Image (tube, rainbow, N blue to C red; front, side, top):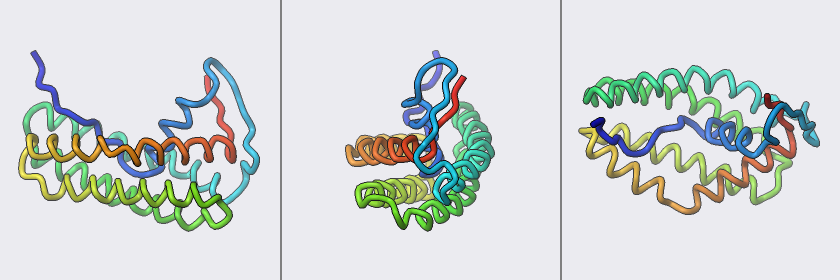
Length: 163
């Protein structure tokens, strides 16, 4: 029987948002137009989707290393992905000038969450220590609400195409 590794890492604030936007979108093949699809925020969001695919590939590599019990490789790979995603998070926060205060608060919460997660990865000395600390962090209820707020704002502003 396989080892249960605990939480799965989604690297970066916009990575979290992208997952939730597509989950909130209509099922099947559909397209919705947001209120401001050409805004700086939506441009940053679309740009981040490409950056997230690179981060996601590294996260998959790190998860594979964890499954094989190689924390050192997993840790290095995750930290590399976090470094790239931090740039995307800076872009996101810089383009939220006209966003409602709850969206700015949610974004700040998610950026803090990602920083905390990065700290857990950096400071953990084993898969067991990482899993314990990451599970405790992910149970934080503010993160779920923040993810939902940012995903709803992103969908309303940028729209989505699925299918």
